[in-house]
Length: 490
Image (cartoon, rainbow, N blue to C red):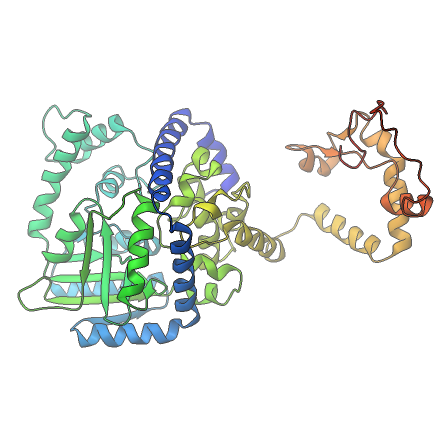
């Protein structure tokens, strides 16, 4: 997978992709803003969500033990997975123990993160996605490009062609009408729901006080997967805990409005262990770490673990709207992916080292986030880590060394300022530095810079005694030849 700048360059050149993304994100963005505006106490809800998440993260060990105790009391079995490979191994072994070779799945970011479908396929187990958008992505041999709307990059004609080509029971003459496409998917999935003996799900929230798991979805496929099969295996990141049902209430208001712009989620399924004659007979919960403990140890970066996967930050991000989700090379695209993936995967690869730079730092993501994750702050923090940990260009290293040597001495700094002022007619003949020579040209390829001032602040202060001896500027607005700008502000 190429680094973000290279992948984004190709995506931005795809005008059809940009059109699909602009239409979809623009529509979701407007609806969400209207849904949020209906609540006078939205800011208070947002602050409550932030505080609950921070409290859980500060006491994560306690709440995880509490959750394990309650799930076990209710008849479930809890498994602990240190990384993606261990989680996939646990799930594969559980499926094999049932004697089945097929599973149905509820949309799950955790299992996308671990690459569960591919791991199960290597074990001879077929995993069938039942969320409509995930089904489109799976049949199209594609990758999700949005957390909430994985097939956001596809339009109706794309989906019709995929169904005709990959869905064996697609009706003859299938059109691209939304109702026809939905009906074809419904008939295709119904047979899977009724025959499946094992289901795999993610988890939106886990209530520590009761051992209750919660899944929110919009199509009813989750309800089918969570109730019909004999065995249910749920995979969740360790940060998905809330302490009590009262805390859950806050997120059941924040998540629907932030994700699908709905006042109330269409299908909210909750279950606690197993009950004879009602739902699965066997329930397993896999608690996934996979880099979250290291993320929790980072005082700035840990706020990414507050994320409730609403994708509101994607829909307001100007970079995501133009580049799309595939350019991020991660199951978590957009602004949240740019801070989450480099932390749970590390910044050792070119892709992960480039993600903190996939932002204009405009701050729209922070304003939209329902749990107040300061994404720009974490991006800047991760950029610093990427520079410290990653390879550095020799020119950059030499420039930083020279800057450090200069700034350590007032005399050397004063000399450098005089040289810069003297060079302003050469490097910026028209008032701006538009092109630097040699390797320095990389800086001016996408930006220019103001010319060095004719006189440094230090020199001006010494010459005018802090401005006390400087003649006052004329009050009649006489043109002084600077086009209304100071040298420093140009």
